Image 1 (cartoon, rainbow, N blue to C red):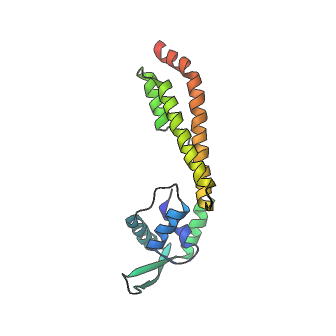
Image 2: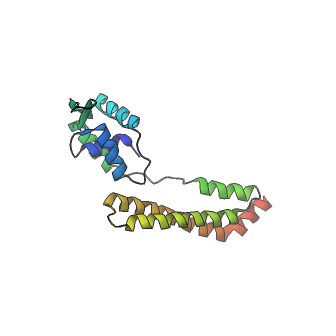
Image 3: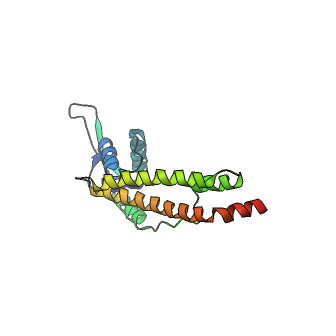
Length: 177
């Protein structure tokens, strides 16, 4: 995920302070890792340096000095370009679950037990996400984020089921090599 473009997207609704941008990021992307304040301010400085954002105002309102930033026309154009780009599907997908199953097969481990335990962990996480998205007052960002995660977990579960059904064949291939 591009922090630079996410911040430009958040600035599209009008000038904001770094603190407000961090808070809105964490609200709008609830399943993402929260942004660190340092990351927000470093990214804002780069956006200003690159001409994609500019300082709108600086003031203290009785507290520490705060700087508000706004997107420039170049920043608006960059955001539109990025948002319109098709993200290419990964040509090869390998994650830790896949790697652990392959290593278990190659090393004479117990991939079947691993898949059963991983399946249970996925199911538990799916139940949590379903509760989050169906909770009273769940906002759109939370629902969309939970749906996205649920679909990925479902794809993992389908892969685990297919792989579990092929373990005898896969193990035999490794044993005969």
